[in-house]
Length: 388
Ligand code: PLP
Image 1 (cartoon, protein in one colour):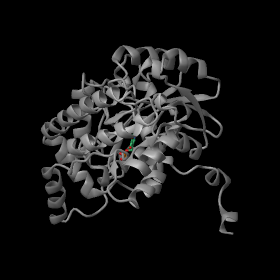
Image 2: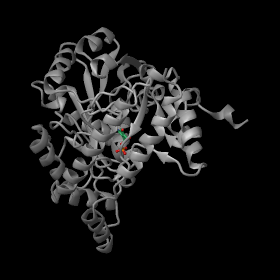
Image 3: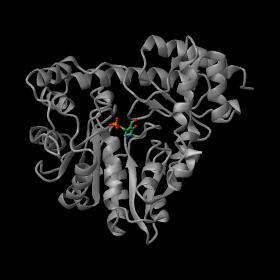
Image 4: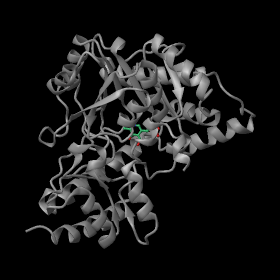
């Protein structure tokens, strides 16, 4: 009965398709989960210690709305050194509650009711709903498996209308692991500049790129004014629970986002900001160690999947593989459901990341090599029943 009080645009949102499998899996025994999108590492100890120390010193109040200035200075330095992009810590950076809040803020700051945002699928499940919640209209474009799930400038251009305000890109990508090269980003940047729209560039997996450092579209000539760069500490520093991210953008957009942030959040958690400060100041050693471990696991899983007849390209980044399940003839939902019931392995059906994800499943390889070996053995037994 209470649903009579719900807003229509919220009632019509579908719940995330990922959760359903985890709720099911959590009630079963002996399940190996390749489903969740989070590191299997604990946050590096020096980061935990720095946060703990900040509490001991009594730093328990709000910070500046935009985040600790020392942290913004470190983020600015990091962006300059890693991606050759320049953001003024005073007025072009905002520290947020995860990349999730940064996405929400960016969309709310730029969208008028009914304006369109191009969402490249398969993608992180939040983009479409976040656009709708901000009053916009998501327009989907499919990155295709035959192009290793990389969207082309022509595809983006074909989706642009007079109502288009922005396009959301994610490289390295969740769920496909695809990484757009500098040249590919230049092509897309050309279309963005020509049609005078914005890019929301979700670069949360940028540190987890295995073959070459992932590039930022904001580093392409003339793209500074057209880019909103979104990133954070969840994935590369194994800090999902700390809820800390950031957004870098032109000063007027950061000022607009800061207004929304002031009224809705105040400031990101103070102890998490001290942890993140240490993460950036202490350098990259722990990230490099985790990255190397992910790389080995990626290589193992891709080889196993291809050998069992689930075609899988070698993804350049993130910690997901997105193999085709066509050889089994099963729908991705059926595949995931049966695999969980029969072999106790949890994966995510590809369609939850958008229609073009159908025919695929997402497996996260952020699990121990022992678990991955066992999971691959179970999957092999499972798919053999369906292959001719
Ligand atoms: N962007 C992408 C592509 C993600 O995969 C995720 C988490 O899975 C997020 C953003 C959210 O990150 P955060 O934990 O920083 O909110």
